[in-house]
Length: 354
Image (cartoon, rainbow, N blue to C red):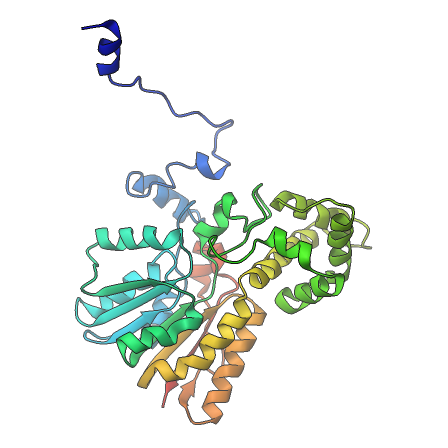
């Protein structure tokens, strides 16, 4: 046997993982323990106990309150209109106790197959759970298959695994492409959208989608950069433009600048994914997919979403289509807010079909 054949038969030499600088991982990919919850369950538990969300995971919000309202019983048919990481879906499946059927949809082509695999490994296959990649504005297509639904849940928040992954471009806190698409295979990125917008359109987007108080200042700074031939291609480029523009606003504080960055990214994400249009369509179709006495719960995370849900529920209550709605939003408990900082701004509203 030649020396080349002997070398080929040898197992590849083990290489140690490249170590990160300092005592704690900072970048998304360095958090390899958090990204492998099955293998490093103890490490993930420690992160959660500190009130943080492990990288690549999502901690579901208001689970107890949602289940108390939906009153799911074995044999019912329901829909999770925003599957995400599958936390709410898992709890609803437990309530069904292998009797009935749960449909779940999500527009995210990256996270959907991962969630499908997780749920299958937990024993929830196609006999009880049916998944589809689609926007929740198309819920009528699900109802055409399922028939009238006993319960529907929609969690309108962006999943933590989307926010935390810098390659998705959802956060100003890490360098990444300015993308912000929930489905990276459809539509145009935030970077391309900004190049198409006028000053008025950018300012209006910031006000309408995020109630941004410094919308005019930020809009001028963005358009000025683009007009100079400087394309805004990354998250840090946009963040730097916002921070530089707000330096000259009298008496502005560092935390105000941070909030403006958050709101600008929120506004862009909503625009890129046509989120308000999709929500309006979903709310319009919701009564038609519910069975008589069917229950719907919607979890919102900012005022633009909450206003739409509130007005829709009030409208259909006046029309006699809903028999009862939540008069005030249900908020996460103080204990949940301490355990999960991302739950602070959540509001749960519900409706029951007549």
